[in-house]
Image (cartoon, rainbow, N blue to C red; front, side, top):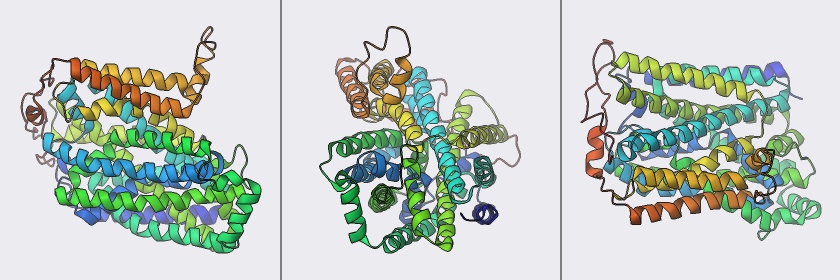
Length: 513
């Protein structure tokens, strides 16, 4: 086992270096709350690609795809994960352009929910979105804490506190501007490290031929593209990732950060291409771990690191530590910024506060959310299970939410009805939640059989079906052109602490109500 002190030292140097870059790069660039939470029209196509890849491809790619390959269906499960990771990025090209058209002055998805559907749907979207982002952040902390505990016996609370604390420093200081700058650097370092790591593993383990033979001998289904459980996993994880990213405020922020439609199209398109091999490479570590007999019922989530421990010398292990830390930081700062932007934009609508109050309010909640994520991250839960629980809610809500961008006839009541129905179908089939429901007297005998596939596909399909029905039957006539006028702008200077933000229309209007 690698020295605990050495790994902690390398982790500290890495997080300190990224933090220094974030602080220096944003000095003098954040002049208002608007800059802090949106960095509007500041990112070219290369920067959009880098920040989207880094923010979406956190440390989870070293855990969840590998766990899928080792325990959820081998090669077809990994392929589904890879394709599923690219689909939302491709879909966000037309959706992102629509967002910029309908709500050009916007900052958050909850702003759109309130202006388009009214207060009830706004609360619904707020809870689901923030819950997903919080779980994402907690899962990242869980993953890195477990990885360093395996590699070097580092206490999980120390890892979570060290990384979470440093990310907070530059996030609270520089907001989205700091996140975008550090994302670009992290992507340039992470991609080569991941490629070298996989190539090194192949060489150390005897080459692709040896691994193929070992996998076939251990379990022929690991490499069987027609293996049904793997195909089912690939299908439902695609629905899970799609729903989650449609309600990911971090992606909405980057839609506004792009400096034009061309940058948005090219940046998201290239990012969609890049993430596929990243997820595939990471997932194949899980297949390798299962083929070599390294995983068990409780160790599939750390399959990547089991292979690492078995195949690599110490110096390579230390390089992977840097990779893990960078991945966590890139996605953690995205989630913290995303939550901050939602809260700040909502405060601006709810209260007539000056810029400094909005700034401090957003930063204060960022610290509170980070503290909660660090606490959960020290507990060692399954990263994949954490993600799937949050993804289920998003899968049921994203269709009516996104439909509101395109149709004037969907009412807030129709959107909520579709979302609630989708969640109900998902929960009763979702294995991780159905088990809790089954403990209620009288329910166990009437609940359907648990199935991740039915839970995710059913939640999305039912939600979509009711959305279509509600749109067809509704007499709502929302003026989509008027939504942007209900958004409060946040571009007044923050330095004097007393400047009031201007308003862009009637803040009390409920849009379509």
